[in-house]
Structures are given as structure tokens and as C-alpha cells.
Length: 80
Image (cartoon, rainbow, N blue to C red; front, side):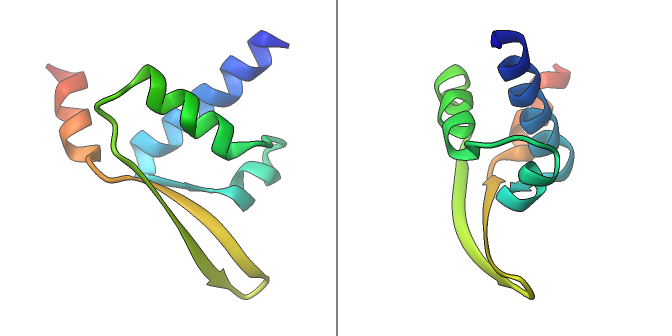
């Protein structure tokens, strides 16, 4: 169980780093639930990550989007 949580969390982190954001619906399509719980854990492990949340309307209703606000800075730090 713990390995699956770590893999899900790693997928979320990768999406935040590569695309800058991740949505609840995208996670559900990939069988990842409790996105907010993963986001809080990621923020705990990476206190310098600024992750913002917002609700967006789409053709199917609403979706929750999490954005890595300081993505450029984080990528520079990771490359250094």
C-alpha cells in the first residue's frame, strides 16, 4: 500500500514539475484519489513549493486545479 501511495505521489509531483498544474479529474482518470491529501503531503515534504488551488468550470461541471506557482524557481533549484 505504501509503495502505491509513493508512486501516486511521485506521479503528481512529476505532473506539477512538467506541466505546472494538475487537476482532480486528471488524477481520477489515472486512478489516483485524494488529490488534496497528496498535495498536503507534498507541501510538507517540500516547504518551498508554493502550490495554489482553484476551482474551474468546464463542460462537465467543475474541477479543482492545483498549480505549482513557483515552478520556474523549483526547476532552477533542481538543476543546480
